[in-house]
Length: 267
Image (cartoon, rainbow, N blue to C red; front, top):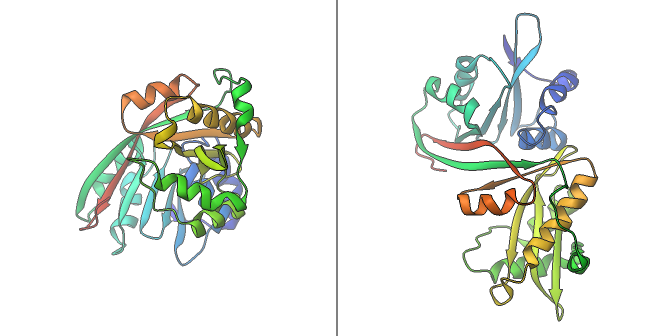
């Protein structure tokens, strides 16, 4: 049976999701931030014969994320998506979306696939005297962070100063950085932080200061602090070379994360 979830289902829902906090980073974060009933957000639960919650479907604006650790009614969740004329993207773990997509009646566009990795231990993270150069950014450092992004080749970010400030104030993002002569030269950030996990994003170094290990130190400090808070870490990467770097500090592949566009809207 599939029905819409309410705040009364929160305990059962979170018990299901927090067993795999990194895999459910976005669903958990959106529940913590916006709850179960907003104009732009809704959740449905798939219940088994014994009344146990076995799957969840999140709608955030036009984006849908299904999740289930085992068997679930993929056709039923697909029907909910198919009935939404504003459905734009279906994303999630490949093992889950692969079961839902064949039943979606809405015409589908391109699928983008990324590697998805997580880290639950600090055992492989190196910490030395250079890590002491790393600072945690405050609201007053936001303009410098955005300026750094603009000064990094091949680094694309649509995040504005206002976006960064809002996310830091809400506690869903933090940034660690190294500066030289008052200029920020390297940084690493989190996004979509919640009570159980955080996404690593924005790892970069200014073009004039590369190959000195600065980004690695920023990331090491960030990872250590987040892990000490009892949270899992996760990240996306799109090529094996990048994956090898992350695996050296303890990240392990979960599986692929796919994003499939609906109608004429492309990912």
